[in-house]
Image (cartoon, rainbow, N blue to C red; front, side, top):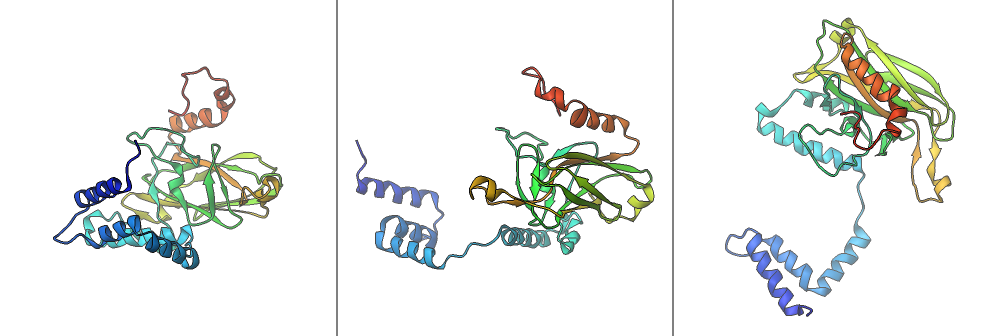
Length: 284
């Protein structure tokens, strides 16, 4: 039997009184909620106001608000500061990357969360990115940035491995700049996947900015071409995309186990992965 309006209203008001904190009179939030639920005229007036006055903010603006709030909270507890707050002046908020671990910029298709689970997309900085896909992530036709911290000894050289993808349907000249280390100029065929290796001398490591969590690494991606996905999808896909990024791995130059594991898993065994029998896991 369908519940009557009066019964539903009674149950809703009971829930509000039980679950929302109250000090004497019902809080303003509870009163507003009750009014929106049961005053049809008021609800219609607010909907009209939103339709006429609301102006959405960009994700960059929202992200700035979130970071500002986090900084404000950190100021109240100096013991929680990690030192990376200083990088915010450069428009960066880097997280720590574990040396020897590959971080793909792919969408998360897992249905469970487990300890140590990290998505590579957290290392993307600013508004120069589109959303992650199963293979990686397209950049926007601007300068896209990546930043991370790595706890590497400055007495020994390191190596950074990075996967990029050519612009969809277009040849391009792309630039990958590992700030403070070196720059790569490369020509990519349409949709071409290319793996780059950046050797990093110990003297260069010693010159990089750092925090207690590790050395700061910043990558910048750009290209002279972009693909308009709107043309191919009849406007359903609104993206205009430049080069793509698959992911990265950084480790000590003398960490031969990590380097060999990376080469096998991301290059040598890629063809085998597609044909692997059920139950075989790669990249664990």
